[in-house]
Image (cartoon, rainbow, N blue to C red):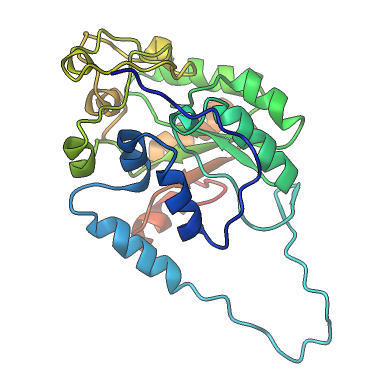
Length: 275
């Protein structure tokens, strides 16, 4: 079974993100949609995250003496139309053949920051070209090997990244029950994490693209899975790693995924720019 990613383009008419999700489900292949829209286990954490976000209320301020509210803001010198940025998401080409290029163009048009994933299906130079000077951050899965970390940081800095976003909460793969039901495996027979993909052969599954940013650094034994990819990352991350990234790259470091206040306090001691 060959994976057929969408090539559709055009304006999308929707009222809210729930409408958009339903429309996307009609276009994106079942396995890919399940991977993107679901979470781990019985989805308890996904539902709790949604519930928690919905309780982060935006409270109106009255009697302020102005009638033209402005959502624009500044993050360390970058002017944004609103305090909303493009989060790091792997393999945009699961959704559409245009992949990260389309996402980067939309982010530029909106006037925000694009955060490229380590597991992007489009390489950094092409994304940077699509952004046309708009700010670019790089999401980092920290390797167990500091020589690899240095090579990746050298590369993304040279190619225009203005900050490093360190993912601290995804050092192992989740129990993806929806993917199991759909017989879906993230396809690392691509330029990024090349492998023989025996499991894909059993499922008669092929995938037409890769993740070129980290390809050369991921070990392939012919049985590459999302679990083995995560295992190539460092499981025992510490504040010292934050300090190493900051010192070596010379870039601002933003720690992503720390949800415990006391751990945030420890991180602050190592002076990341944001948590």
